Amino acid sequence: MKTAGWFAWSVTAVVVVGLVVPLVVVVASSFNPTNELLVPPRGFSLTWYGNIFQRSVFLTSFRFSLLLALGATACSLVMGLLCAVAVVRCRFPGRDLLGAVLMSPLIVPQVVLGMSLLIFLSTIGVVSSLAGLSLLHVILALPYTARVLIAALTRFPVSLEDAAVIHGAHRAKAFTLVTLPAIKPGLVTAALFAFVTSFDNFTSSQFLVWDRTTLPIEIYSYIRTENDPTVAAISTLLILATVAIVVVAERLVGLETVTG
Image (tube, rainbow, N blue to C red; front, top):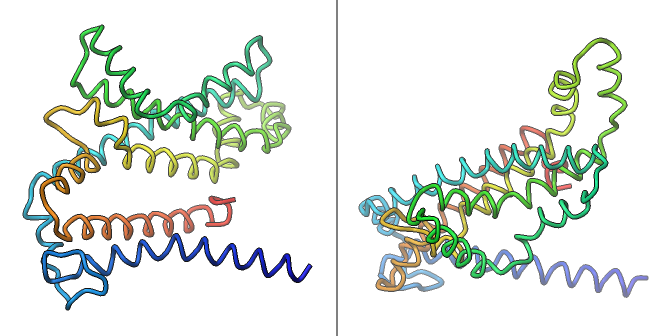
């Protein structure tokens, strides 16, 4: 047993180091005063952080990615909740098939998904549009919201909602006032997954962007021609934003319930 315990701790330590070291390298290199990606840095400078704000394309693409991710999160959250209710509480032919269809974007390569949607949108004459890109991001985020909310509703005792109905509340009101607050950790988790999936997507989005690009695509375009720590500075800011989101989630519902 001791050998198994030490082996488990060793594997865990290797995994943690493998996850943390790249982040440390990125953060450290972002402060390098020269235009080289060096670790440890040859000094300390905020030059590359200033370079982010001097290039309007980064700010424009960040705003676009943020709005796109928020919209995709909202749409996928509503659709995922409706699908979860149908899968968990309704009995109908094809229920298992519906669950499989909801999860299908997870097993289809994103290159195939982006190319297929590009061909479809070109066929119907809706290409290089916000509608097409938004549709793609909703499709990418929906499996995460649906899966998390299906699990949350499965664990929720429906008898509590039935009790509210027995005491005179309409089913919709009982669902809103009893069920939704009870599954709030699942809603927060689903929203986090959906937002990150949309905001960070590059592989599929590259097929559908036009003159307005997302931040990941703008970063890719930048590193094709430049080789300085500006991208490391952007990545550092995104890491800090991620930490802030986790802290907010912990304040809202408790970190152990969000990640559990």
